[in-house]
Image 1: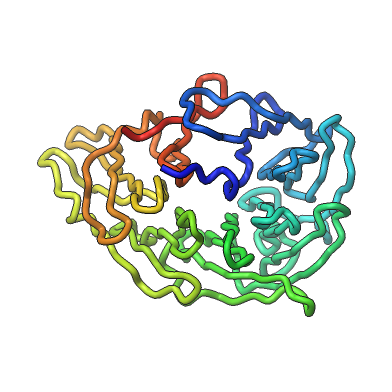
Image 2: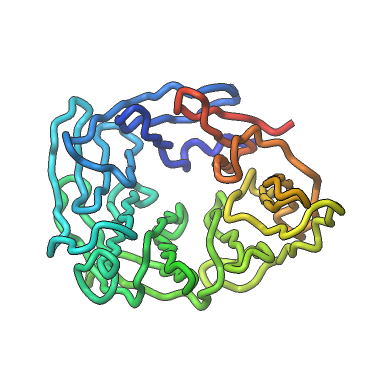
Length: 316
């Protein structure tokens, strides 16, 4: 299996109040040691974070700002969200780097925060925090997640609007500013981008199936429905969980959750052929819960150890 490290973003975790950065490489399993550690400014509540490949600085979002800090703890810049929020709960900002680390993308859930009627998407200069592009969106979201495409230079933004479903945008920074396209579905939640950036793994908002879509157009590639997994007689209310991704270019990891007849919760991961949707069998992720799973696309995945640091596992 080819190691995809040159194309993989630095992995981050929040451990004991610090932003820890990791660089999985080679074929060695086990708990990862951080290659860089950053301390947020005193009093900052970090809700998302990103670290570039050179490990020179860390970026993080709080409910009120995006901040850049150096390895020695010095605050290099702070970009406050204006106007100030009027609501405290129900909104989580998100920041992420582009695949080449040259842009910092920021999702602002301004509507839920009481900063305006809709949300806002911004692109900042990672070196200075200067605004490079901005777009007002059509959403009233609680939170969002970014997916940086390593091949096209575009960035996907998945915004969760609670019971109203999910909205997905594609953004590209141009000389004229931030160019935004709303993708043609509102009932699919992205959970994984293929290692080559050409396909998006999604789960239906009702959690009845998983579907792979071609990018950039969003054409349906394959669908895996609940019934394709079979059903154990003691299990009911099974769902396809919003967890998993690409184990490698040819294999998906999907997770089912549900309850037994005596109301005991369960979850089970499966390997699925990424080209034809065949169920390849049950899979042990060593995870403590359905969401403690981060496939890396090279045949390995991460869970969280007792220390809070990630643990790397390999298939086979």
